[in-house]
Structures are given as structure tokens and as C-alpha cells.
Image 1 (cartoon, rainbow, N blue to C red):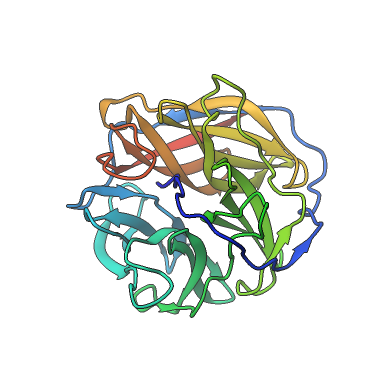
Image 2: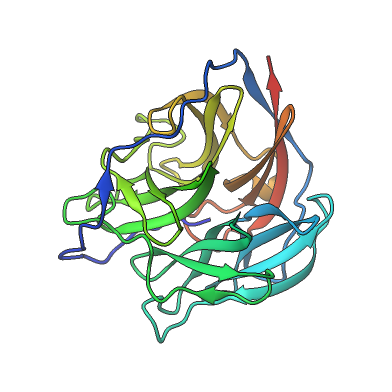
Length: 321
């Protein structure tokens, strides 16, 4: 959804916790590749300026979607449910920015939801510059925000000095791994990683960023964001949004043996219909045998933030040995 161009200048931010780590090894990587299969047309849109950034997960026998809605002034988080992942109903707004707190009045959205120890955790971005916060729920209806960000921007000179945004949480064993966008003082937007045992206290990877900007002329030369990570076929995989120089957004696919060192696969997914011709972004995934189900945001206006006529779309990555 958002690839923020941060204008504020920050004198200093706390150093936080840093460490060197990687995800558990998965064994031998299988030979093969993914191919993209697009579902025709958008699958969902609210009566709003933009409907973007889905986060889909199984919940109580259905699929739950926490997505972002822009009303022309602010970004909010809403939920809907589905039996098949294509038809959605029961929409309700569950989070809005609180101008009386550090969140400010612009955004409480662009998040990632997981079920963790019999509770729903939703990591979202708020504030200006953005930082990553947490909200918790037992029933997907009533949500309780944490009092402060759980992932802050980094210290002076850090790769994420001016923003920490676009969270995506990946569960592996008894640990949570958070892939996210960071922005430095040169306004370069790249991807990094943090780890937590409880969702509240996070340790950042010392060697972040884990993926650099694409070379000149590449689809992702102007910014990276909105990662979605899974494991399959002996590897870790990551879909991410790439911003071109003209602000057209597409998805790229990267592969890793340890969740830290990533290589681009060469697969680039772009919108093939008028409604998503300029923007294809915000992936969220569910892995099934032989395929990865992908929900995403799409739009027909090339812009890094909002007013893209955003709608939600669906496609699948099909494994080809």
C-alpha cells in the first residue's frame, strides 16, 4: 500500500536491540520455480478512496482479512471474512489512528496479522514518521492497541533511521520474524528483519538491510517494501513490492536458504488488467500443496501512497518442478 517518502528530519532515535541471527535451515532446496496465475478482475473494494493491503489468515473455520481503507483523510484497518478467499462479507472497521497519542491522525493500518498462542496479533504502522505497533484480539472484533511502538526507527545513520513500516510477520517454530521496510536519510527504502519470542520485544538483525534496491532501470530501483514470506520446497521465499522510477509498482520474488541472504529469482508480477495496470502491491500469502495463494492490492494510478483507486486482487503461484 504505502511506500512513504519521509520528509521529517530526525535528530536521534534509540539504538534498541541488535543481534546476528538467521532462520532455521530447511535442508536441500528443490529444483523448480514458481509461475504466476492471475485471477481475473478485483475481488473486493469498499466504498472508499482506496482499499489495499490485505492480510489474510485462517481463523475459526474461515479466512479472515485485515485490510486497509483510505477515506480521503486517513488510513484505517477493517476486517472481512470469506469461505473461499474470493467473496468477502461482514466488513467492519476495527482500528483508526488516534491523534491524541503518538499515532497521529494519518494511519493505523498497512499491517500483518497472525494467530499466536491462541490470540490474534496485528502489527501495523502508525505515526509520522511511521513506526510499527501491535494490537491484540481474542475474537477479531475487539482490538486492544499497545501503548507504544514495538519496532522503532533506528539510530542516526541507520538504514531505518527515518521509518520502520510495512510489517510482515512470519512464524517459524516458537519465534516470530518480522520483515519490514526501513528508510534512511537518503530516503532509500529497503527491507530488513527482526525477531521476537513474544511479539512485544524485538531484536533487529544487525546486518540489515537484507535486500538492496534494484539496479538502474530495474522495476525496483526506486524502493522496496511490503514483503510477504513463506517456506516451501526447501527454501524461504519472499514476494515484495518494487517501485520503478515512474512509481509504477510490481511484485518481485526472491529466494533464500536462511531468511537473511536473498537472491532475486527474476519473476516479476505486473498488473495485466486496467484496474491494476499501474499498481500491484501489498502481497499476503497462504501456502497450500503445489501452490501459494496470494492476495494483493492493485490500482490504476502510479503513486507511492494513496489515491490509486485501490482494490484487492487475487492470484496464485504454481510450483513447477
